[in-house]
Structures are given as C-alpha cells and as structure tokens.
Image (cartoon, rainbow, N blue to C red; front, side):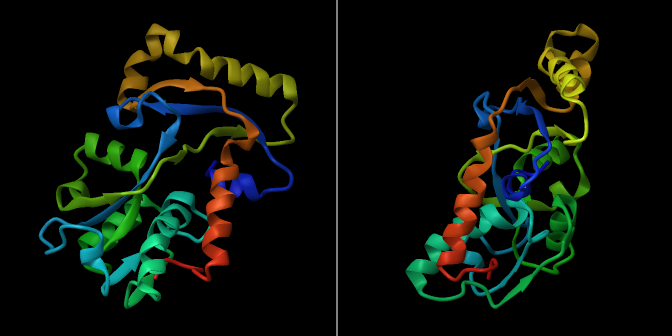
Length: 211
C-alpha cells in the first residue's frame, strides 16, 4: 500500500513488512524515490530544463507519482515565485502510464516510482529504452505489504513471519532476485508520517499540484 494513503487513513490496515530493493541505490534500506523521466531524444539535460513545458503525474493520492515529486519541485517554485510548468497533466494512473505519456509526447517530464522503474528496466521494457532520468527526489519509505484491518491479528502475524523469512527459503531465491527484492523488513506505523508531512508543507505553500 502506498505510504501516503496509509498515513492519511484513520482506520489503518495491518502493516506486514516492507520490501528492501536489491539495486545499490537503495542502500539495503526499505526506501524508494521518484525518478523524473524525459524522452531519450529530448533536449532536456536537467530538471530545470523542463520548466515551462508540460509535466505529468499519476494520481493525486500517490506518493511517488504526485506527493514526492511535488515536494521536490517546491524548492524551485519557492525560488521562482510561481508555477514552473505551462501545463500539468494528471490521471496517468501508474508508473507505466507516466512512461507512456513521455514516450508518446503527451508530457515533457513525469515522475516514475523508482522501484517500478528499476523493474521495468530489468525487464528491458520498450518504454525504458526510449526514456532517461534527469533528476531523482529524496528518499521516502517504500510502500509496504498490508492486510485488511478485518484480518485476525494472528493471521496477519503468520503472514508477516513468512515474509520476513522469505529470503531464507532457497526455493524462493530466484523469484526474489527477479523481483529485485533482497529481503523484507519490519516497518513501524510512524514511518509513513513523512509522506503526510511533505504533503502539508506543499499545501501550506499553496502548491496544490505539480505545475
């Protein structure tokens, strides 16, 4: 479950465990980023180069596709005293939709969940061959696996135990490697408070959407 909706929910599901991605940039921690992606053939070499163009975003309740990139852009907006982009295109739905929008020229730049991005690249998805990253946000707690609040606590505990020991099971090793997961790790309820804090910071600044 995405960390921002989790932080905002009054009745929270059971937190089971968070994946620790295997690529080096995650530092063996349950974190992720948003990659700002542009078309491979574009003239853009840095994030500021995209200012004045069109930015895309996935959904307005997504941490990686909306909240985290908006907070990253806030520093530039504060410096410039106004909107950074001529137009903002939303409802790209998910990381693949964001990549598609860049490839098809619907937007000039869009944020992509770094873990999904790495999975797409590992699979040599065609969209990743037509795009490149010009900036990366600061880290954020990675989405965790959860169970409905209606699931009995004993059941949730058994599932959590299975996840935390998954890396010790030889038969699961090839699947873990393919999924780019080193292991699963316990995560505290307050880990996702960060996502709500950066949302409030952007809202207080009057920056209601990436633009």
